[in-house]
Image 1 (cartoon, rainbow, N blue to C red):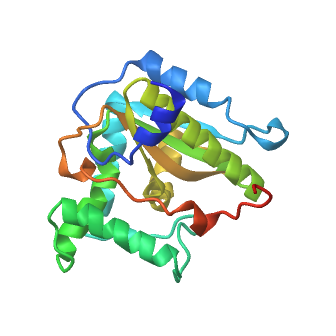
Image 2: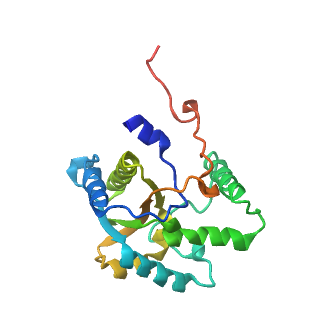
Length: 225
């Protein structure tokens, strides 16, 4: 798979096959993604990789912690979204929700089903491998951008192995459980998780493609006459 196909075929995979990923592949993804650019070569990423019994245990603990309640109200250590959304971002986010819940045949007014789907984040959508990605608290916006570059490099590399991924900022809401579980030092902040596995492309949650804005919406071409 070439780099163009890897970028174009990446999706936020929301259900995975019950198929293991070889440990050596996971390690190679983590190592190779570190070639991502970072200002001053700071390499501001910290990764905690879980599989097997450790992954099952964190899922068990989280399931107990969120049983009977809505974790969407938990505050992360940073604002995942602005408190009030505006255009064009508001419409883009709402349309994505329409696509996802429409594919799953979950009615807009079915709050229980929508919450149930959200909670599947905390099962990693059945993925056999999960990464927790952290950053040092003292680092700034430039390093946060570099962290995103690392995460995207890892996801594109995963496509080279026929793997799918889902970056999940939702895990940032449960940092009080994750941090002690993986022995994350207090100077680090949990940014997100990344689910990795072989995507189940027959599952309705993976049956749609999120649209992208036309370039004229976000780019000004200057001097290209």
